[in-house]
Image (cartoon, rainbow, N blue to C red; front, side):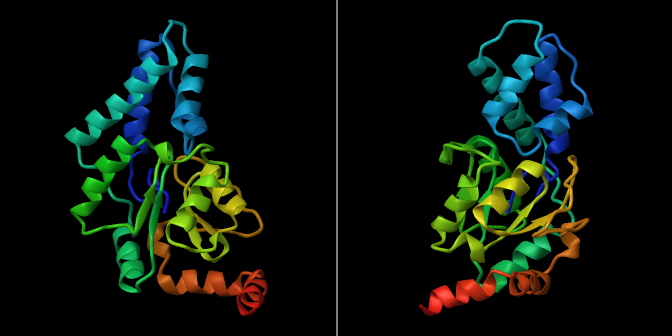
Amino acid sequence: FDMDGLLVDSEPLWFEVEHSVMARLGGEWTEDDQQALVGGSLHRSVGYLLSRASRPATHDEVADWLIGGMAGLLAEREVAVMPGAIDLLAEVRAAGIPQVLVTSSERVIMDAVLASLARHHVTFTGTVCGADIVRPKPHPEPYQRAAALIGADARRCVALEDSPNGVESALAAGCVTVAVPGVATVEPRPGLTVVKSLADIDLALLDTLVARDPRLGVLLDEGAA
């Protein structure tokens, strides 16, 4: 499971923080700018902000402003959980299926969101955040690492994402991928299932998507060998 924009409605908070940081840098921030950063890494976000700046700042300063601003908002406000998220997570957990949180956010942000989700009795088998990987989304490394954490072949895993970067990462890792687009538009493509909401997903649908995956026969043959 991705985090920002998929499980929790944190994108409005990111927009608020990015707008504030951009103001400190002497520039304007629009919804198009926010959309360009959805699903991206901290390094990429800082570089983008600096490219739009009219006042000097270091990479580390801007990174600290982003992380500190977001952590502050999460401490002040309980982030809203997306429709259907709690029910789907509970159904997967009840079935005994491992579930991993895979986010580009830094650990302090992830931990704040996890604390909020814990109030809904949500737990994960493992987590992957920005500090855990070298090559962020859209590279496949985040989902490859997530699969490795639970000892699984990524091709036997289902990934749920909301952004083009996240979708690209999951598909490149070989995951059966479901997109629930939010702020950013996700274009349909072969091998990708697009739905409007997590409320439209249940375990039966995920089982069906895996069973219909044309690679399944090959995977079963590999397992038998």
